[in-house]
Image (tube, rainbow, N blue to C red; front, side, top):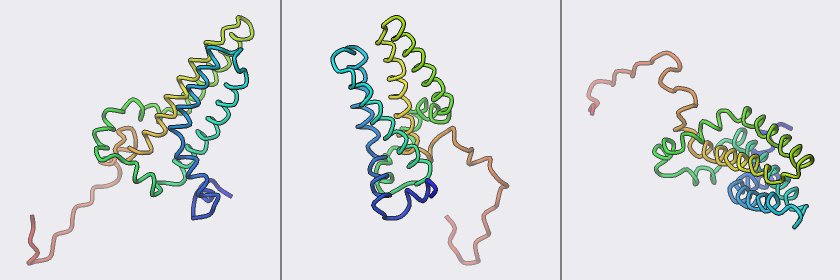
Length: 177
């Protein structure tokens, strides 16, 4: 089964995956807060950061698959803001991040390895704040791009693609504006 098939239709699986994908913003916010608590006070609840990270990564992965393969579901369409063009201009940096997601994923992995090494050798737990903050920005980029995709300045240039097709001449007697 392909990812597109998993999100299509009205099956219980497709509804669950769609529901999970739309939890991206609240789950990321909770994950970030719990991860920061775990980074600042690692002895308080050592399992907290791992639990938060696992849940956040699962929802993040499902959200990316939903946004890539499911297209715009009814809930996605309802979440498109009325002033989407203006928001696309204001959130241009998030849209830029989306278009460089693989590079930022590599940066996240490098930061995680560096933070882990610093934790094991120097006891510097707070360095995990860097990858945690990057995940917050990446989740925001995924969410923003999906809502603002038609207005994204980094997606294909609609004016430059394909040959120009002139509008047909209207039949006689048709009022032209």
